[in-house]
Image (tube, rainbow, N blue to C red; front, side, top):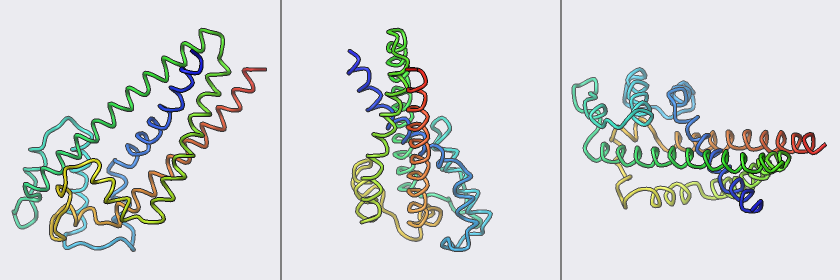
Length: 218
């Protein structure tokens, strides 16, 4: 029974840390920070307009589904900001984003439940040890992921999109608004940010978990 409960930590802690890191990056602060960087690719959009549209995309992901919010956006010349293909893709992205949120919630419930059972069995030290082990598992997976991203970012990016979205639905023209808002450089930086956040969270949890395990065990 204890092995099963500890296995829950090993499998669910990575889910919590990965989704948590993704959500940290998926807020308006990140595109705003990117656009302020001198090395970030320019776009044929006024800086304020670019920031406004990116912020609307982020809000769409974090709010209840409302594709009409994006469909109603306009460019400075009065044209629709996003075409039907872009709107369809954003709807797909929202589905994936919501699914990740649900997965994280389920993972949290399982971890709390498993921790509660271990605690009631007088295994408080094992709870902290399991948290630390889950964090170390995350760091191991992160090492492999980071190596893949470093060796071939293009293969990683294409493979991830093929896994998550219908074939070809995520391909756009360079003149499309989504590409102007979120060029490849944006996703490279976002990937680095997510990896960095996961690494910090996992290392901290692994260290604190191990220290608390020793303290509780006496």
